Image (cartoon, rainbow, N blue to C red; front, side, top):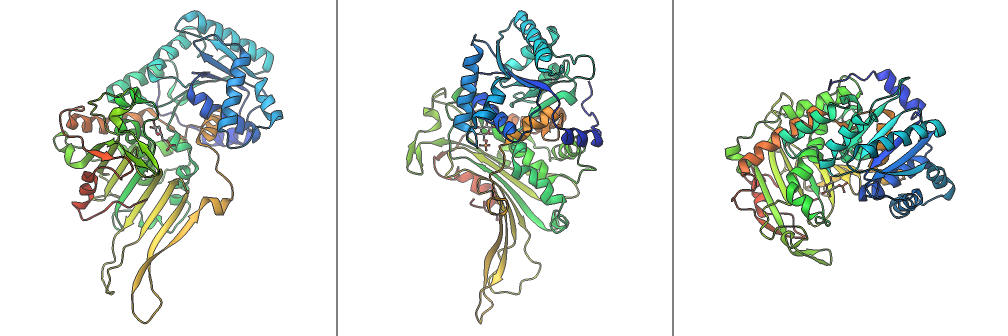
Length: 508
Ligand code: BG6
């Protein structure tokens, strides 16, 4: 199966203009958290914006039997609790009449019943044989579901150009070998162009704006390279802990949970070359080149380029919080990291010698995702106090915006300098809350536009880098894992990582 399908730009444009074709969205994991908290509100908001097709149906799938009415109520509650806009009964009613539920377990007969149900919907609601299968289930269920879809003949597009696509949530694998095994199994049933791997960071408006910022403005791009940039910092700080996901987190740890996907995607968007066109594969080709250009880490020295840590009890805001090892589902002697910082290099013409410092952590003092480009200092120093050097901060969330910092003269007789800044804020410039990531991602998957989804080779290139780190760390071997007090900025070792080259983390 091909993994480099070429999207005809004209077709993508037309799809967007014409809107989503009639289709059925089949959600596996219909009774789960993701469906209630993210998918249901996203679908409702797409309906508010009139972006869903008239001939549309949503089929919930999970193991336990449940009447349609119960599924409708559960989704409605999800919308009421999590939608960015309040429920309008008439609009909700339009979605509700297309909602149904089918219990499906591990047996083929459940999938056959699902096929019959979908065929009935095609006849009754005019959904034309187009299906989007959304796998909101644990990754261990991906393979069996996909293979049973194929066996029951549900995954085959029907006659007359209808389509069948599959959406997968992360994590895709645990390492390179498992990711590529899983990708083989998925691609045995779905062509790569019909596989939509979600990284929900790509659905965020501020992340999509990175390409606009870089390639629609002429002032920054000439500076966007080793000649002017001293280093780049990418921070994804969270104040929350593991939120009851002890078992999952023990297996994952922050490097697999956040760095391999979200932080690497941000890195790609900051580091990539201009794509030849604004087309899914053109953009993904450039992103994957960034991952392929990452300087190989020698596992023997991976300790020098990385810092991991684990949160201990502490205070966040006014709230006392427990340490990671006291969380439910976590081993009392766990060696899983909840903080991960790394120094890496993109070995190519643009970025030669520029360090990229990435960090992600839970139970840090606040929630803040931002990217800082620290420019090099001026070549010659005129002023008494050294200029602070310019920096550009792209605030991904919250308080979305962009900040450029530079030095200015303090009014007065002496040439004293003070850093000042120019600030762009989404809130004041656009005056409205941006749509949720899942709205855009669901819409694009229905439109068949895979620009904001992760291609197989991207996932695998990212794992191949992360695998070497784990090799060096001895897969949670006996090396010390520093603790940090919840509510602080991570282990002191992370400061040393930058201090070695005379740099410091920027405080979000
Ligand atoms: C998920 C991780 O992918 O992203 C979570 O599994 C993390 O551990 C979450 O909390 C963060 O997403 P956001 O959109 O809140 O930054």
